Image (cartoon, rainbow, N blue to C red):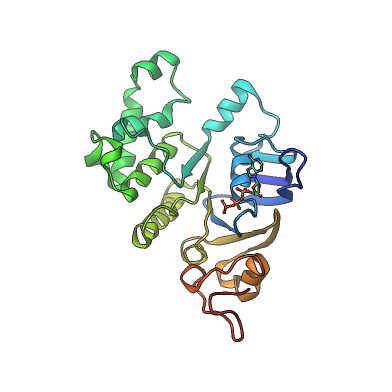
Length: 267
Ligand SMILES: Nc1ncnc2c1ncn2[C@@H]1O[C@H](COP(=O)(O)OP(=O)(O)OP(=O)(O)O)[C@@H](O)[C@H]1O
């Protein structure tokens, strides 16, 4: 279980970007995090995997407090947090298999990492996960020869190779065409259930959040102002999150504008 309590993040002397956030994610739930640009979505994920140092508050993953960890303890905790990126973050000149095995770097020793001699069990797990997501036949292909959707599958498998206790995805579909985005969202949804893995997805596309995740968390200026099921994510919620900030159109919100509203949204 991931439990975030009163999380505050401030960059330098600026106003806090996250202002006392509370969030609990259990089991295999798939949670989308929505909010206008600058609301703090990426900062939240980056605090969880400690790419950013939280200013105060607590983040526990299966009982381990992540906020004050350092050195080896931090590296060990980070192995349990899988991350999927908008830009895939693959090593283009390496093969798909090499990219996937990079997910084991936190587990192998330096010699194994430098010589890329991974244990047989890792290679077998890699093949099995690649088969699951439909990229096993590309194992020896260079990563830069794959399509965006295939590259993101590599990114997902690399994250799963860590045997994570939680998977964080920061705009995982933003670089993909609509159909491929939906396939990746469906994949994340089914993997969460198959692997009993909680998944947090930062996403701008509210329509996809409603379709492919079971819980939506809405941030506005670093404050959590919606936390509920897609069925409850109505026009009022949309207005509370985006109103006056930006104008998500129907293709993104999945909802026509309410009567009297701006043709493209809610502003
Ligand atoms: N390293 C940093 N130093 C200073 N300010 C930062 C840093 N990273 C983010 N910010 C600021 O924090 C705020 C929240 O940014 P963040 O990237 O978390 O928002 P977001 O909701 O993910 O936005 P987007 O949807 O555009 O990615 C923004 O005002 C941003 O300028």
